[in-house]
Amino acid sequence: MRYWLMKSEPDEVSFDDVLAAPAQTLAWFGVRNYQARNFMRDAMSVGDGILFYHSSCAVPGVAGIAEVASSPYPDATQFDAASHYHDPKATLEQPRWISVDVRAIEAGRYLPLAEMRSIPALEDMVLLQKGSRLSISPVTQAQWNTVVALLKEGKR
Image (cartoon, rainbow, N blue to C red):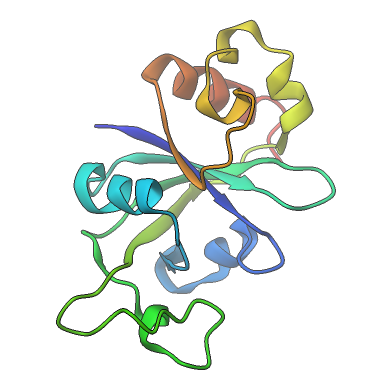
């Protein structure tokens, strides 16, 4: 089992949106970075743990715990000319971008980025490294355990 941090802009898809979805599951779409795509395509497996992170918002932070709920498949938005995520170079025969389904597991409390930066056990986390902008990054088991324990303190 592996662990991941996956960033989403909450005005596009929030953790509450996933909790409200049928079977608490939504497609993770719109990734347009090759390294993040490769993580989904080559390294993620059904059941892997996800720290669902809200980015590009007033208070960025981890909003909940989720899991990978499907094998990788072509991201449909790459073929939709009306989509912000359309890629004219992608074809049905040779898709360029990948999606996986994500299932919400538990909300917990909101864990702000500022608090994460103050926790010595997280100092090596990819998210906290200078210049890190990846929408998907690996998380070690120790980092996962630390964040999950913090999320469970004072659950909402």
